[in-house]
Length: 71
Image (cartoon, rainbow, N blue to C red; front, side, top):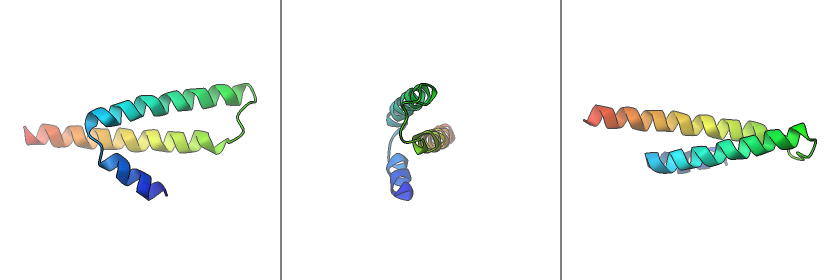
């Protein structure tokens, strides 16, 4: 499942990646707040969201480098 999700991110453009990054960071923030208050039922959400954020940041950096190289 993770590889399929990564491929979905690979097909996004830079604006879509940035929007998804903001959304994922918000999810991570909410999960951390739930963890702190003892309301988080699925603790793996923290790990999965951090992993997703790293994928998005990596792909965004690659796409920026490709755009700069094309100029």
